[in-house]
Length: 314
Image (cartoon, rainbow, N blue to C red; front, side, top):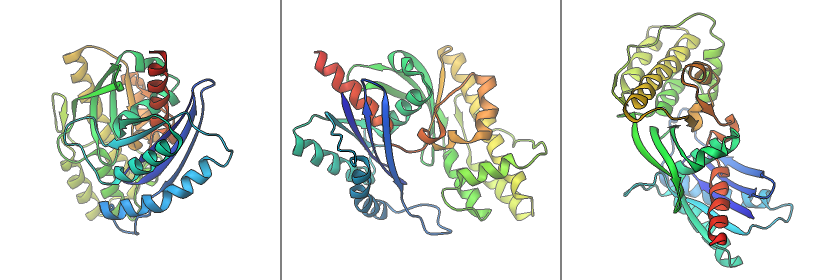
């Protein structure tokens, strides 16, 4: 079973081929161009850039002549009523055309489920998708703690049980990064600044109530530090350390409320080396590889193979 996955998130065009027989994976992607100094993209611009990128991504992915047996695509950010972003329509159109032209089955998954599957796959923890576990989705648009469980219809279902009540961790990172003169998205450069700062940094006072956290105050405090002339490395470490402590507090509250389960981290923010260091030991956290933590189509391809395989058995 060879599965094609397509994902057109707000900042990356990606497609992947996954072979269930040997576990081999090929993921190809193109970041969407963001003007210097900007903090994001309008949806109309994202749709245009995906339309431009998709032929190039498909040409790279299929240059070996390998063809898929099933097609999957991310159709919405999350598996909840009303979840919608126009950028995903680009991927749905392309994946539908491939499936129809080749007489292949087409499966639809949420972008969030794709993140979770990619993290589990790349961490070598495929068995998580067959049971129950916690997952954090930390990205530019989302900071949610999820209760995930095996689901015959969608392979894995993800229910929000906590997270940020205002801005996401990725928004805090990107907004502060741009203010520090970093390029957007700023995660990788901000992480490098933080790792290069050797002194200890005291995180901000946490704004956490049960399984809900607020990060808008962190953005304001970091902005004040920048205005006062604080060193970039100090500000970066301050931001990431505060996010890490907030995530720890929410995770512990979730364990008290729902019981202890493995905690899987997905999303681009979770590729931060500093965050991984701060979270791994205390939470026993499971992380996907950095390459498959950020937006990618790998998880969609994996879910597609699992779904197609389960239907074939029936």
